[in-house]
Length: 338
Image 1 (cartoon, one colour):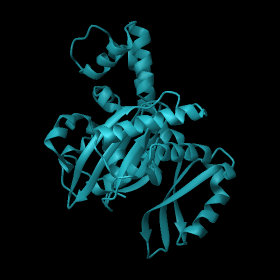
Image 2: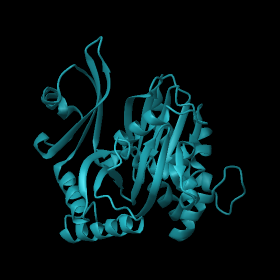
Image 3: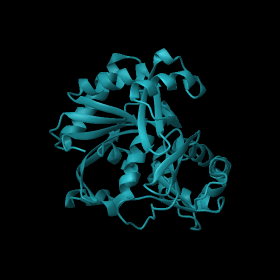
Image 4: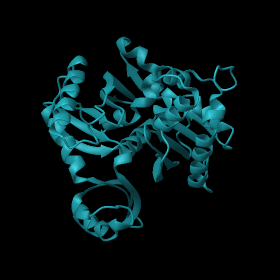
């Protein structure tokens, strides 16, 4: 890992920037911030949206006083396809060739229109096997991201998805003892804007073993709440963010979100199956609906909480006010640890 780069994490709702480096068993963060992603950026093919998004990136990086030009980029899990496979001990060129033969099993688009990236999670030398994370994305998406970042005056060094960056972060986080026991098997729910990803980490490292996308994210809970209460967007956001389970409220939020809650619980239960883990950590947009973990606790026989990396991080006094927002930045932090 080097201190020559910072991380730009572009998701559907926000784009986030973190400049950090590993300092022994602590992550030293010198800059962190976010701004709204242009609503037309991902759906539109217009060059104007790329220029406007690039200007927003330039403004945020400038406001954070980051002078570096080289950047590691993180893109949403919802726009990529993941697979974790055990493969024979081959070099990267041979691995890519072997994977292309079975790519149609998890990539629902022509292979010629796809960028495929490999990350070796673990080498099993005795068995001559590799555990590999395969991430695929449309070439036109990757080209759009690269072009936008270059228009912002930055140099793209790497592009990965949230799952890849999160796995790196949790591997590093396990090396320091925190209030979260990351030396036992656990699950992570990357609670995104339009969808979520649940991943399973086995003890020893921890080792990313499986992941699955869920078609539920913050936006669905937001829409359901807004429609059923008749309040405006600002008040809807405040209602979700301030909800405390068991506390009297002007609106029956628990009843309103009950169908979505059951659907999310069912999706998690199916993924959990017989896996030997009893803890689920929520990250990302969960900071905007923190009471969701308490609601889910009634549906699932597991310990459910929000993972805050605060104890792993060294923040300057000027950044201390961001303490409770840090679960939003897990993948952005992971992008700094390459």
